[in-house]
Image (cartoon, rainbow, N blue to C red; front, side, top):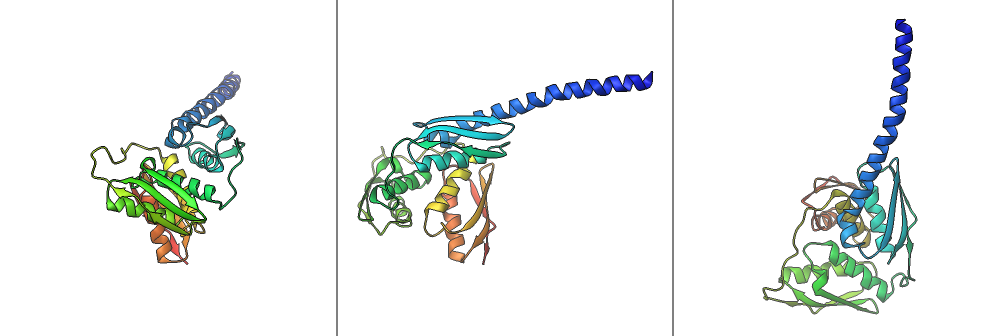
Length: 251
């Protein structure tokens, strides 16, 4: 009798697990989709794109159209770093023909994106133009430091030959600093990865990026102390980052 009772309980437990497990997976998948759509990257950089996200047991599929390969990369990096994501199948397509790699238009897009990623610069107040690889910056900077840093970041972008910084330092009260907000870890990681890949000083670095409650940890290898220092500087200035723990080793 006891044996029959145990068999019944085991059978009931198996049935219960077959019901509960899919429900848990479904809830987790819903959380992944919600986290992606509420991420800083999605709301700020990808808001004009047509992106659909599906998740099945942590396997994410991105479909739809984006305005450029930069947006496609940021979407994938953000999704990959969400809690519970096992892998990402990026099927996003670029809706329009992109500028040729290293062309003036392509350099302009990269510089504008880089200025937007960093909290110490102000992309909305900076006009970027490029002619034969030479970047000209115009607009208002809230300080000399912001003006100088905008030029420094632009100069280190692949393809840029020179920077003519014509920005003016404005004392107007209408020129405000960026408002800091609580930015999700996945978006911080995605921004740091893109910044490191886009700057020629750090593009070749074999760097792993992880973010926990706004604290960015860098690991991997750098060829010199200067490369390691630059990686720290770029990561520290990313929107939402609180601090950087650079554990990279120098080869």
